[in-house]
Length: 298
Image (cartoon, rainbow, N blue to C red; front, side):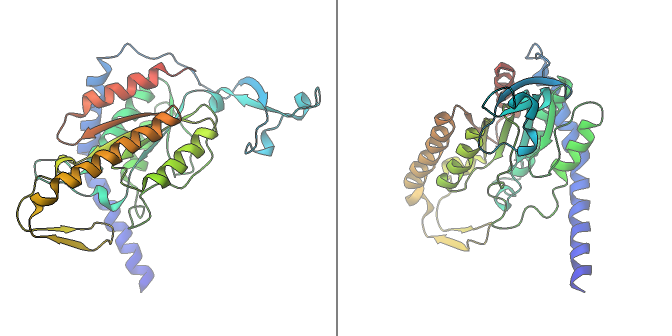
């Protein structure tokens, strides 16, 4: 009985994801086309899996990647890197946590819809440029070519069962190839200490990254007045404030501290950070992100 109910729930979630697919994909392609007009293309690197270089073995590298023949020529261990492992492979992580299912006004997109839109548009731009792209957490390697967008769209919009309370604030760490790039796209409301630990772990393994901070404008300014009830989206319960305007200044100060903390986390390891509000057009923020990726060394 429980198994049947679970299957019914999964089917329902899948149908919801499928219903979102056409309009979001169309919107993403339109945004990508607009952004593409503002750039002059990218240098194509990282195609195929041909030999690229040897490098010294580092703690954390898989043993199976050691080139024993090259290592036998000296007293050091060497890793054999391919173009795919060494160059421009990009992983995307659009935040699936429950807090992303929120908007302050009907005429605004939910944070999750905006994150998915940015992820899809960025994936489209990267695939057009010949880059390899994957969604973090799927266990799949980055792909390019004609089938890439279909698969990436399915992975981004079909994340059934991932948005459970307390499970989606941050992704679990998974080893990525050195010199690859990881893009976090979400409200990034997890504790700064946890995010800092995760980012430093990726950076220590040679992964470059970008924090694309996505918020509803009401989360930035807390525009409410009078008696206001705030409901937690991740089982935090609720908070009743008799006069919301009395806590606005303190709230905005704490939000500013959080954003400064995110920027510091990124800066400390050479990553980038940008804040994007859902009442703003996505094109400008996406253009900055894409141009930054284009400037990364191969």
